[in-house]
Length: 275
Length: 320
Image (cartoon, rainbow over the protein chains, first blue to last red):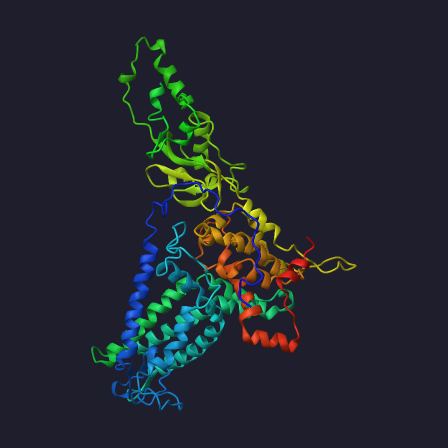
């Protein structure tokens, strides 16, 4: 059954003459700034992350530098081609010979692609549908998310659950970053701080997700019969109100985390130990 | 002292004649304001023994406000400039009323409460859907203020549009359907009803419907799209602890929930600051996923033998 099966029309006259001049918009403010900023940041992220995924080197700072730092783009590194020390798991994809980042990038990428906030951002910025409020849609025809492929946006909740798995893995990475092999055992460096902040931002982004809010309690009709769910829902709701901020902060910081690990691994500078 | 109202004659900004000219309406002569009359009286005061001339007084340029208003009907129209002295603290609706009182008595405009609660004076100010009574003139940028009717709905005249579409959709929303009344009456907990109370703030100004590009830019979608105002109505009913109807298939199949691409413009323009997208549309979309797209939920329904209502069943269950 498709979305429009059995649809009956609302009995209104369509095509009546509309008031106002026939122009794209009468807005006088700089409405184009917002979609431009969105496109610029997302394009920069796409370009950087694509390069980072395919460059397939300098993603791990190991015992040779007395650190245990791995780029979030390459974690968990489960391919046979992973650099020594970066494999934090016994599950090894021996048959995988290209960049190991491609194995893990699908989950977080799908989570962000189907995210309700990012949908708003790229529908406005890239698809111009619409570019901004009260600015004419850039397309003649419009079916929204009612047809393939955009109907697939409805699987967002599954990507949310996959994203949680990655959050756990990156949290473990952040904890492992306290290890200082050959330099006193345990310590705290700038790299540790970067991985910890990255993990915290990813958790805030995931937990503020609309699907999380729904699954944890939003679907309940009578909160009084589900006090625990109501409590969780009350905690997630204020986080959800800041989902946009968490989305941007976590996106930018995950790229910065990769960059930091990459620069240390490449020997551009050493990771300063704080204590 | 009529000179104190500068450039008060309405001026069409376009190349075509203004609608008011077409209608044979002569421009009303500008009238002196109360302040002007007071100044005149002062200048003519013979008690000072000196005949003042207006040129003796250092003339300060009086601040003015120019409204560029859409004048016309279904046969066409044009933007017309009206310039009046600016008054401190005025909202756009005040200026429209002064235009009606002085320069264009036939200017059509729908209004009622002047307090942002009746939802009548919806229009587009500088291109943004807004209530005229809640938009202060001094908070707008310098220069002419463009006031046009809501773009999504057919025009009747000037700033008045035909919003019948919304009332037709409203008829198609299955009403609240509580279970049979128990002997001791209905009882609800506060935590069960407070979620939907936000949606009761809606004043039905239809600015959200106006800004929604699904029908603003694609008129053909009106046949199968309810719009943000009615999505909050559906959400309110779906979240109501006593409602027994299941409208998820109805809202997905016939009310066009899938057409919404959550660009949040409805939330941005809502004068009651209802979080339409976050608190109504997205929860509705997630409920539609529960009902139609989630394979695990589907399996759960099969195992537990739970039934979701078809659009026909949802409509039939309504006490309408």
